[in-house]
Length: 228
Image (cartoon, rainbow, N blue to C red; front, side, top):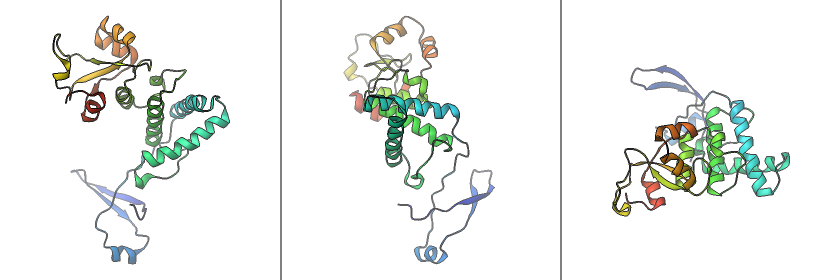
């Protein structure tokens, strides 16, 4: 648990990537008593949330409010914002960063993580959306991973099959339950979009829908019950 929060300044950056940081201790006697020897360094983003990010956040909050409360208006969106910001702080933020933030002036990294959290929430809870989720993404790789984890089509959000990409495909006649899947590249696609992919070059399909391949890791193999 973080006991003290201290702001310092970088004084010098060495060629090997190490830095010299100058920071003042709020209580010298306590520092000497506890004999601090290590510190945790957090580098602030420095960039403010963009207008595009803010628009995406409120679009996603609107989708959630409409599903949860049955109506999308300023009051329901504000209530979902309050609840989900709190959950995000508790579940996703590191303890040293766990403090209230505002969507009017938070940094771009926090906004990006909050957008990813909202998209994960929508996918995990099977919340229908007016606009394809990928259109409100700020991190396509994280979106693709969440879709795979919950077997949702990365294009339309419907129940998905697992498409093995070029270079990771399993030959015809091979028992897929006996083939090691760890490290293979896949795409989560519904039957309709899976069929569409097979009717064109894979690269063309991915460019059309702005998708990225997902590499199967231990967590995904376990969730999808694939042999590692």
